[in-house]
Length: 227
Image (tube, rainbow, N blue to C red; front, side, top):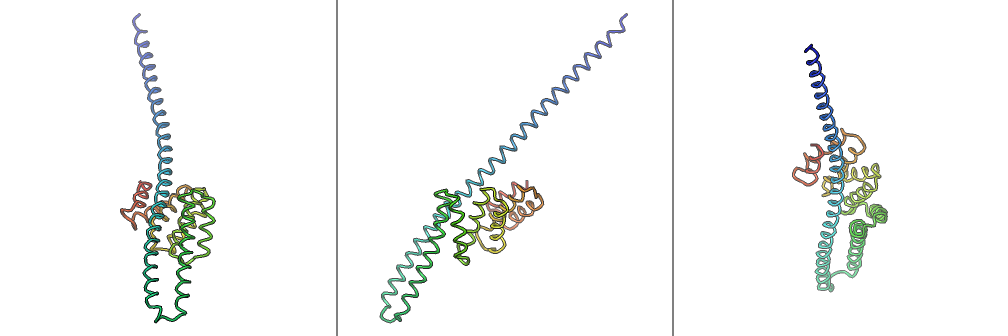
């Protein structure tokens, strides 16, 4: 007569264990959902940080340009003073040639600064893109040309035109090995490859930045993506 009691106890124990398992599965699913949301939020934060860093670099470059212009004007004043002092001895034809070179240099710098201001100060991105294209076409040998390629690539990257943006960054990294924008250009190539699903290429670009520009902000960002 006492035999049925153990069966009841086993059934209750089984039901209790099943409830525990279901509860654990629910908690695991919640954790997975929370982790996915955190990962998405982290990616959004990284993208936002990259945009803000780009803007800060643009402002820094603009300030450096203004300082350079002040120094250039000061040098020009000294040159003008020296030219006036030696005008009696210098050939008459020399002055027009010097003036021509000076005007050409200012036009080149002003053209670049206009495009940079459109991108970083006025945030008129659709106007900045053709401005940088025009500058590159007009001054292909300028010292500002690698920077123009970089900013054109950055503007295209922000618009989602990844293929052409990658070409602009590749031009900087391949054709201007001494450019101050090279590390960032290689980093952007890695980011584009990553967004396009080419993990192998992305890893190659990130590793190149870390190896060649250790300690730089671009290398730190690349290392985070490698991790």
